[in-house]
Length: 444
Ligand code: EPU
Image (cartoon, rainbow, N blue to C red; front, top):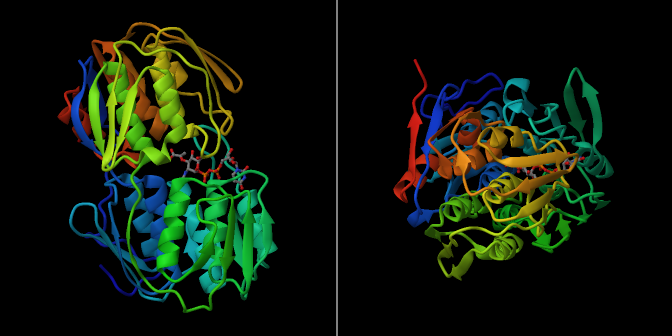
């Protein structure tokens, strides 16, 4: 891999390979109870931010428990354009090298492919003093503004303009500020944190997001030499260090609670029994309580979580909320479980009003779901009926795979590139515990 990066440098052939899967499909057949063990991979929504944090200090980083997912490859490409090289080592390991000559530009072609590209804004501004980042677009489930990221950086002294679709931010040196978020935004918390580590003085972030992935980022920043108090709480206090005071580090990515929940859901709809090695029950507390209400028996262990599903699930009402509430990313899985549970469940979405698009696909499988604004009313049926469906986003794609496990006949899921963005070998992991599932390769 090139060690003299430039804004135009193409990623080397040995970089994390991009997967071309747009035409691939996942075929799922109705499956009996899943049984066995699934190893839960590292979290997408942590590792992408850990990768962006390598902007903050020169040197060689070793990230472990890295999921093998497409978004990691895209983030590696973006960081290559900025000046950081990424190489894969043993399974689950990345070596990243920051050579110190950074190009603070995040081009449209890369930003439009991955929402987490916004996470280079804070570290680049804090380290280099300027950034040009193409304005990220929305998602299939709705518009995703970045006003809180920008107003937080402005409070720290940044001058921000919008030019030809780019956010252009400048600050000779950011200064500390007291910032209170209207809403505990995950991305805004991360960007202010990673900007504040190099700011002059102290930054206080109130109503900060508290997701386990943010605590994971804080742990990596602290191991690099950052001074952060209040980790895991909604008030983060960051005492800025002098430029050059941070160092590269090694870090193990936190296990993915959303992938873990996907295997819980798969066990749940098939009446199965699984051990999820690596799953951290304390990161899923609220979800596990509600799954218990649905009839799952869940036993946290020191090295994972075991689940034993009833013959038929019971319906519940659920509302999504920021952590420690029920994450919006769990919702398509919960709706799928309710679609085959005994009774009627009402699901309320409080984060992304448009995030019900996959419901039409579940209805193609015979689910009885009505949506009205932020709400979905789900009337459970004993089982579904296989059909061709399309994944509209990562989490909905995984939920359709889970639905396929309890649908008579075959469910063919297209739009698999969405699933590949966030799931490390979903098909292989499910097949290994008894699911009747295969991946159809893209036609050449
Ligand atoms: N929001 C604003 N202004 C802002 C920032 C956010 O209005 O400046 C709003 C958003 O529009 C949204 C809500 O606040 O309605 C939540 O946004 P947040 O910033 O918390 O989310 P994010 O950082 O953009 C991350 C995950 C999402 C996950 C959300 C919520 C990553 C890369 N993405 O997004 O994950 O749904 O937090 O937990 O970490 C996924 O993995 O499939 C995914 C979409």
